[in-house]
Length: 129
Image 1 (cartoon, rainbow, N blue to C red):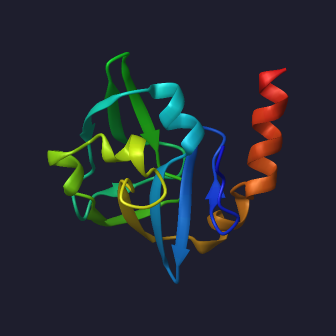
Image 2 (cartoon, helix red, strand yellow; image 1 turned 135 degrees about the horizontal axis):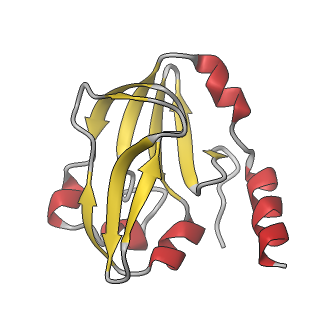
């Protein structure tokens, strides 16, 4: 599986890519494989306030619906509206075109609490045993 080193991860399988005070959010390669064929994505509205560890979006697959949690607190500055037309992009490119939304961070210290790629991979290996 693919876990880009420049990203940070949550225990609930979201990733974050930091660009200054903004964090682009998506779900990991592991998560999209577990969820399988994504058929619908309910994204947060621009300007919506989200809280670290709280549900911010929903991804639906042929299996079930899954909450997507905010890796950091702040205000949603942009949502990936391309997913309204083609939610399957999340399965095809979870780290590129399949991003979900962007947050303007309220508390940058929350970033430091997220898992590195190595720590996330170690967590997955331990839970697979």
